[in-house]
Length: 286
Length: 205
Image (cartoon, rainbow over all chains, first blue to last red; front, side):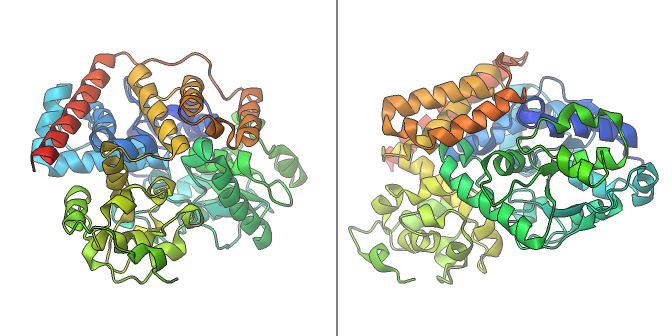
């Protein structure tokens, strides 16, 4: 296992609310794998889609404050939400490269930028810092017979120069993780299509169209369920889908917890709009 | 798709594409209209001008039409266009710049999209974090007061979603306020000052 097993943890605003399954499963899976997460002190919202839509300055300064607080510990910042991740990454790059901006932020927030604390997405941490064998040993209940499609969505993989995944059009990172868990990975055409993201409240009808198309794509490919790495994608697909049948949507960390046989899974599995438990019972996984 | 309406010239602002480039860092002049952006855009069907048309309109200095368009409010920022552009033009930051210019020049935004972003930023100003319940209340009130039919837009789907969330215990009714709110206030104050300074420079130009 790599030596970098201690991290600063940025949970994001939805980890206790609409994405509580993501928050809870992230925490227990990391604990079981020996990845120590230290929650960032007094963290604030990254500004999400709203800051960059209306105010360029806030789009960099709000996540900038989180990066600022993380400087003292100097550990990599693990972020489960792709949008939070992207905004924190933007803010870090801006402070790294723009001296005038960095000095302004240091003056406003009274800190010193060291550049050691790098914002990283949780999936990337799981795939790079964790040895497949280490994870393999922890798997006590392989997800045999569960057909999954991996759904990456948009800002997790795009823009590629910022996010740095294996392939922005056909990423395989989550698929490979699912294969380690013993699930049957199913290929499909909607891996990186957008679910409508932040429009879920303002333009729900658009999100319904886009989410339904993605869910139909999963059904056509023969999948039992969709795996996501984003709180926004999950809630959009889970609550807005209107396809011929309901398809359960999981966070990748939930399936990790399930395959690792962690007892706490009961605490959140029933919180999805499309209840995944009947499927899991049918496959003998619950 | 033909350029159609997009090329009907009103008075051209020849400096427009330079201004957009300066603000967004994206060189719109390099677009040769292959339309990959339009083809891959998930919300193009809601746009009055498609992404490639908007780029051409910027090249042609159609400032007023671009800033008054519905398209700039329908972009979800999924970055598919920028990732696939052969000339590496990222449209998402361009759209951000266009929305901010449109607001400064008092063009009417899409009420729902704008109200949501406003309520979201107010939520952070108030609590340091986004709090769903109070944010939603402000969003819906803003819609009702600005353009009341928008309040009813998608309401049934929203009620279904909200009731699912409440039933599953996923909404907290008490906001979680961070400790050092003075720092958040300082960031908002600074942002307001920067944008008023920018407006002054714009006027003196």
